[in-house]
Image (cartoon, rainbow, N blue to C red; front, top):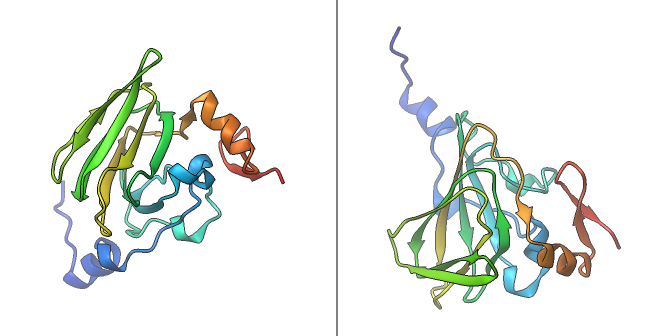
Length: 181
């Protein structure tokens, strides 16, 4: 196998993204119109686990190919984050700034763990999970990694689907957002 090379210019233009310069989207997922689930999603690199593929703000910030994973940032204010959802792959969360809480369902009981900067949680396949910012840090930022060759779309808890429908959003058969109002 021949060893590939990459120039500094190629590295900077196709393989580097600066967090301070990244803009994301406030409508990547079904739950984001619900008041407690408003957040910004920044698709950094990868397959783009989103339900609003037409949103230019969700184009990966690093255009280089990512094989078998997706990396994104979440920015949110205190108490805000993702509603209960599951994936057909693991999902890893690592706070970069601020405190975050990851919660999940154990049967019908909600459980949670608080995470500080650098702490890591790997949520198993198929578990309904969510997360929320647990601090007043204006720069609260969490890294999310979804693995697997096909991360698919989120599987929403039935309560989230019903609440989102009241905001005028649902997902179509392909898992993409659709306005209903």
